[in-house]
Length: 473
Image (cartoon, rainbow, N blue to C red; front, side):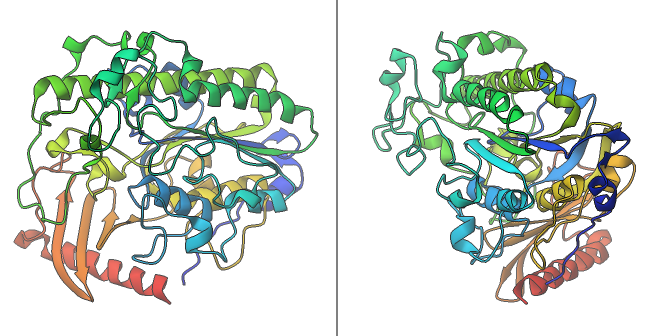
């Protein structure tokens, strides 16, 4: 197993100096949103309203090319919080993956910080399963509905996901799920994420008085389906100004292994992905949910500042993976296309200038980065990622050549130029995918078999097989 960890800032931090500031050890506020792709103002998307995240981004490092290591929630979080790559079919491969079950010898990120003297708290959806590594935290992980994320989590209206009585008219008779979107005229705290924000705010006040450094994780459900948000966030957008994806067709030469998620089909009100009214409403709902989460993040960040904790708290904001909004006719994640794997990652470190970084990074890098920044000793012989501290100090630097991503029997490498994948049967390649983002940023034509790409494709296949062998050793 190859171990690639940088602990470049450790001696500086242990001496009590935090990148130019005299300070106690840094706190960590770790914020994760579900299914949030980099459809944010700070990523250059002007028609999405996210002022609070954008404001923090102006003082942070915005990783423009950050990728999850598997495009599904449970596995992505299990991988992220252990700092380990998924390994098909044994480790972190399913939506309901358990880090503790799939890799019981691994030390989770919160346990590592707790062992390092931190008080660690989990609010909302942090690990996919609330019981996963529950003993890692200093206190019992908290959710509005602790039992409300099993297979029945979207059954109407078992866990209070829908707040508009009219939604009861759109229950899918096969799945018993409610409609895929809702714009109820209710307060922020009527929906779960508003209460997650309020609990996190209360915890910030409590943690300030404890006299210990803290690691506070805050997990929001939105913009995950169903696209339910208070009406005032829908009202931020005019439907006539929303445009559907301009490439709602399958890419030329795309391997049959690449499919769309069927998740949205399980909800009520869904009719036809090709219907323009559906496309506009679904995109409108997604944007409303992003703005709703942006506001909740803003409330938490405002309280952090009011308490004076902003001067000594690292803030991490990320989405656990990407999401298709009609591109290639796909709605959801669950494939190795750019929109499934590309996710926002914003890291604010007091005393660091920040900026936009174009270097490729991946979520397994987050664990060693936070250990590096906070002077916490990482577990030996576990982490697969690389500390991003050199990039946080200088956003023009690079620490790796590519991200390594897996989905089912497909293995993907993403560089600053290529998104390239192979599918294996035993050790034989049965399908190939290569998109050249310099020529085809929208991924509309698979060029894996083009003669001019043969050499690059061979290099990618070799890298992938070498990485698989490393993980299997």
